[in-house]
Structure formats: C-alpha cells, structure tokens
Length: 312
Image (tube, rainbow, N blue to C red; front, side, top):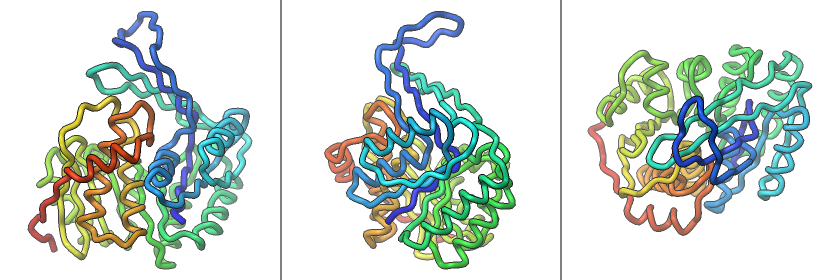
C-alpha cells in the first residue's frame, strides 16, 4: 500500500476560459469539480499506474462530505479524520497557451485535538504502508512542531517517507535526517533562499541537502524534466516535447509515478524516467492527477535520462 497523506484537502473547481481578463465577465467552456489536494492527485496517479493507494486526510462540513463521496466514486480507498470546520474550495482557471491561474483557500483553522487525532490516524495506517507520501500544505493552526515530530517518528521506524510541500513546512522537512523530498525548483529555491533555474543548480542544491542528512532528493524542473540524487548516484531525466493542456497536478502525478516505480523495486534511474513520464502525461489532460495509461506508456518509451557527476 502507498499511503497518500493529505493534511489540507480541497474541492478543486477547474474552469477553462478562452482568455482571462481581469475585471470582466467570463463564461467557462469547460468545468471540472473534483476532490483535490496534492495527495489526492498522487493517489489518482498511483491508481492509474496499477499501484495500491490509500488516502488519509482531514475533512469537515458539507464540502468534506462531498470530497469523501468524490474520492469513493473514483474507486480510491480512504480514511478521513473529521474536523469541525469546512473543507476548503480552490479555484483553478485555465486558458489556452497560458499558465493556469490558481486561487487557493487557506483552509479552516484546526484545533490541537483535531491535529492529534489526524496524526494518530497517520501513525496507525503507516504500519501497513510500503511507502508514505505526505503532500501539500498544512491547514491553519497545525503546529509545525507536530509535523516535524511525525516526520521524525516515521523515519525512525524505517519508513520510506516522501514529502512534497512548501514554505515553512518544507523548511522543517529539509531538516529531518533520513527523509526523502520531492519538490519543484521554485519552491526549493524559495525555502533555501537561492536561485534554482537549471539542472546544474538543482543538483548542487540537492547535493547540499544530502550532506545535511536527507536520504534522497528529487527536484522537478517543469518541461525540463527532473533530477535525483541519492547514495546510489545522480541522474537527470527529460520527457519528449508535448503539447500541454494544463500542468496542474503534474508534480503530483510525478510523485505518484515515482512511488509506484519504487514499490515495484525498479532502479532509481528507471523510476525517475517513469516519474517524469507520468508528470508529462498529466499535462496532456484537463484536471489534476488525471491521465491515461496509454499516454504514459507512449511518453515513457521516449523519456531519456543521463547520469550526472556524483556528488558527495
């Protein structure tokens, strides 16, 4: 089982317009309402690629009940920790030939009791997991100290834990020895206070994080692919050129592809190629974490990788 932990899930409303113009009335030409949050996108990708995902998150109110129903309708297994507040809704506006515009609600503030109940559920279900993905933001009120404590406990038990988050939560994760991180270049650069705009800079940053105690570091570079550094070596992988529809959720599909490859025992270089292919396949579709197995298979056959000079 691949445990997909979602501290701050959402209902994602994706709207497509021909052209977004501030201050004007628009009529959407396509609409998609789906369970959202990075971890749910990861679970979708795992499911598409034949893995065994299990979603675990904090939900509440009418929107939370809707989210649970939508996840069940997709055939994804889940357990939800209940909170008193309402699950957030996020709006994604896509348009042709432009990056998507995201409006993310912060989420309802959670109590210490709700956080503790959620962490207890994570501890319980983690015992059954081959690999754990913790994805997305923390809801308001979630203590960073509890997040750090959870990461340390899971890694101390020898669990393979991959974290994909940002801002203060990412800074916390970067300081936990034995942890694995998958992060995009912009978020990592923001956390470290450095520029990461190419593979060489990404590899240098990843090498420093390895020295600081992280087990494996994967940095995604958008259309330029991704890099991976671990004790086994350093690699960069790139997909063939595609005509993207929307990049929303591609980083999550990447992590889902990575998780499936790792639990199948594939070598790091092969796993990286499969992860890149899953992210690229996602960019061909409308909606986060949604792609076809056929698109993935076509792309992975033409995804290339190179070995980078080893980093200490």
